[in-house]
Length: 505
Image 1 (tube, rainbow, N blue to C red):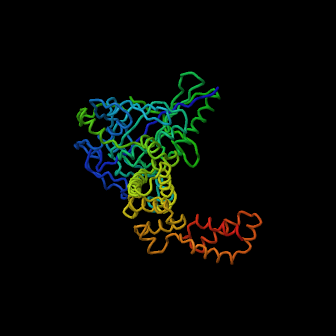
Image 2: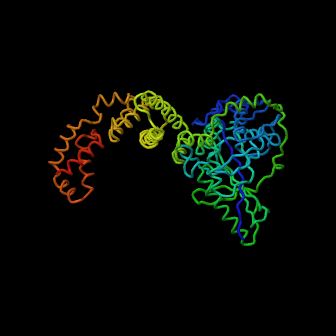
Image 3: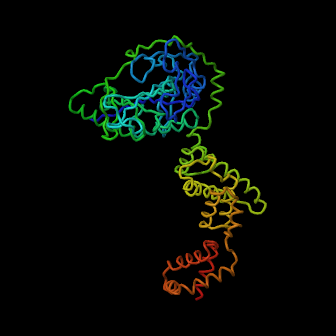
């Protein structure tokens, strides 16, 4: 019998707010010193009262609206009771039956993945388990080896949780969903969603469906997956593990498992808790919240163009292929820089149209030329840095001018690389660089003919090879001429003049 994996997700996202969820302590994920961003409120001291972070609530509502969710008129916070070393109060303020966002969906390659809810809670502290033989940051460990350390800097950080319906059917689709969600969160600006830093943590629920029946098997949860690769591999492993158990005539146990990256296996952590185990009840220290349609409309108006709409627009407006579009979608800042450069190029086109009317085909050539230099050459120079950083000196205007010089064949592709490098280093205008370094193309026919004669004297064998029908000899001679002129000769002029001279020899 064949088994179909049925997959649902619970994804936790740390929100990008200045302060924590219920107190004024800094929300600083980059803080390296433990237990400095803490106060009596986030440490759960007796007599303290929480105050709701309005910006965190708005971030959750914005996310829900971006994911087509319904926003109920009323929401509330609840206490989720459990005891663990990383939970300072002995309970977590979360949401249970009245979350901020319900319903919704995210479309992945034509498939609608339904979203059950998006709610808001507070994060736990961070447990640190020192490596055997060493303490934190390489210090020597005490004699005892059975201990862990707690850093409360993370305790109380606004944590958004998104729960999907069990609509996913493969490890690949699950990875695509998580990747697209991360992208949306970054476009919205609600979270950096860096999985390596724990800002986005994926929990996967996997059960198997036998054959074509609708009956579902026992659900196994895999906790805190911190990379897309781990998500994909854990689902594949768990699907295989459960399949072997069922084919052996045994039963799958409903439990919580963790992922061991070194071993590539899931491991048992504990039996799976149900909602009643947490003894939810309304948080007595926080009021029920009323969200008006006016507030919803205001937040909705703040939602920027999202990744899928950008893909569709770039395809229609710039006629780019899917591969190039995806580069500009994944790198939002580069995509925005590209559009600014194209806008400048269109201004240039308008200026020269009284001399030369460019066809749609020629304009598309300009756009594609920009794409090629941005994605290959410029990104190579950036080496992962951003086009919006203070160290990035090339303005969209100068980049557009650079592309126009290449298009007008005022510089060769070889010289273009030199000019772009100088622009990257100094931020100078490309025309200024070309003039100061004498990099403009040689277009004087008599000058090119003189250089050809010099090359002929040095390469008699290549001339004889050409006369014998060896076509590679022509490319060799062109290369020698370009080398002699340090890439400054107009390649097309060189080819035309060279062919005529070789034919007449």
